Image (cartoon, rainbow over all chains, first blue to last red; front, side):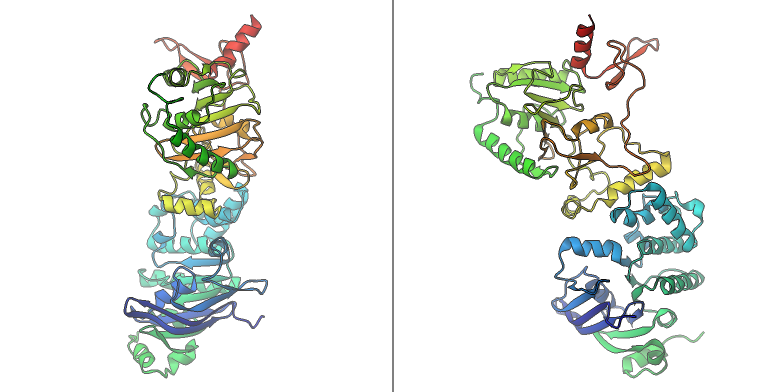
Length: 258
Length: 277
């Protein structure tokens, strides 16, 4: 196990006009680790995710990514082709709304195969076999491989998006509210699936959620955000069982006890 | 013809188009924007091709114009006539005698030589246009050589139909770099583009783009390793000259269901019949 972080951010600051979205945010993510970012709406969680993944440029601060060979790259200074290669193979992005990343007029198999083909896979049989394998891994029936995503339910779409993301075995996946908008039983199955896949593949994950329960279930470490600041970080259980910062205390105490 | 410049276009316009052509030749398969002019011809009839031809035509050139392989269809006859009147150049229907060949939807059967130029009329220069509607995005995809999307289309074809079902305008990769539309020529003609000795120029008038494939450039039709590219052609031999290896059109001959397959390249068919006679 290497002790260097796979992704680290220093001093990230970004204002939307006068509204502070990120203020001097530092963050480290180690290989194979799930970091949950929690906080209320508008606290800067999604902005942080977009900045970390290179989709949004911060006004100051740097994000550096360490590749498997040990070289480090400044994500926002990287050449566009290299960044795109990373984004379509070494990294993955799971959106809250699967329709944002899926192609709705392309079959499930084509959706899963796209990232393989973007990487240069040119053998139809292989692409199809791997698509089939991944559909099974995310518990989608193999005979739905040629169906269009618009015939899928919300939970299936989200699982399809996860298959499409993980098919290239990324080292780092960004997830934005992956269980948002799904009913509780579907959420539970999906969380279970994410947890087992991520553990088996050893993927590092930055997970943004407003749901403390999701953070507790998946996260190894947690970062609590409020108005653009990271107010508290630490091991998930430690932070949630013994919150230090008043805001974290409020957040934890506001969860309904089932 | 009095009152018109040689080959209709004014010299400044020709200069602008030649600049675009030079850039296009320097970056094989890359689409170069140009200031397309109004031509005395509707869009879709070859306004791009005719501007490229006008810009490269010299007084000693011999021009051949084909439309779907034929020298005697409306589009071919009128463009040939146009240049005969405005440039006074010699015209021909013989592929071998021509120095410049303007074409719509075919490449002649006869192998072209290095002293010839073929000009294609292109309706839609962007091979990704049906898959990605945004020009900003397709430009970025070309810049990053990010062509996975095109293979998704091929994947969908094989998954649904068991084979790649594109029969014309079959996308090619030029010089191992740029994804390029070969214009709506049949997939049958794609292999002729690969390492062709003649210079290939493409003009899209409405879309205002020019691109080129220099002589002896690698042109590969996209495919899968286990579903290789197949040129499609009618299995019947030509009903007139008996050729089996040329591209055929199916022609309805009467109103009682009579039909025959004939060479789409009329010059090729005629030459074969004359040789046989």
